[in-house]
Length: 396
Image (tube, rainbow, N blue to C red; front, side, top):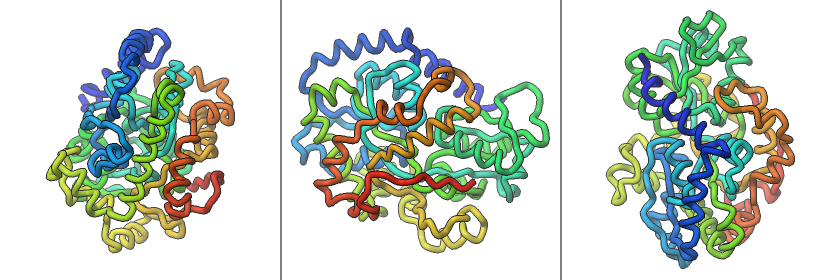
């Protein structure tokens, strides 16, 4: 019936199989075989979304080579299952993943990998059909999410509950007037599904929100960064073997990514061109104009969003997407807490006994990114206070 039937069930089943000890075993054996390649080059796996920006810019601008590394052209993959399969088996060794997926990978399947940095902050939104003007109007309707383990799912459910709505999973019966049915859908399918009224909204990474606006089939109801200030969406995930046995190589990879974030912050329009289908490397299938709406929007856009209520916390001065690499422990801790109270279909038993503080310590290795940030001028170079701790601010 819905695009979801073609994508989410198959992808969720595949991911569920991969992210178990038994399912990961053959992939880990393949990785062990590949790991004998002591001087493996940088091999990036990515989805064609703006979340991948720093890794793609690091490649496109030659920052890996500047660090003395060999880097192959990044591999475009089509689903989170494909990325994880390629990563765990060692086909790629640097990936961007939805931050909640890394929690599942580390603690659900014991994947020997760690978060080493953030890719970006914000960069996502809840987009709805033009006639919907308030979250409460989603009652009785269907909203698509990119994956159960996603910050999108966490933020959306916070918004729904704040507005007296109950999120429910896929069911045969229509959702009740105070319920919102959530389905997993490939981001590329969300725009046509919204246009044909198969769903009433979706919450996802850019540039799919900008695409709906550009096509005139939907509007941004709320930006996720306006709900959870400066939240991470995708993070950089690397193998522990590389971090432990190739620390110099790993440091150079992170150095290049941090330099790419700084360049992106100062060259947003150029970044849109570099990532577009018109760029030399054709990293994504998106038009430059759509990417510019995300990376380098006119000030009039921001004014309009404040007026419409898509931005309610204007004082936060959030960019539509921003870039800073430091993985604050407070974010990971709060993410784990919120995942425990979030509707998630599939494997979630491991969350029950997960301690947020201990999980943050085990999941994240910030030693490489701290050195890279220091060499790049400190956190102040990213417009942040010179402090590696912060308090999470969430206003649904």
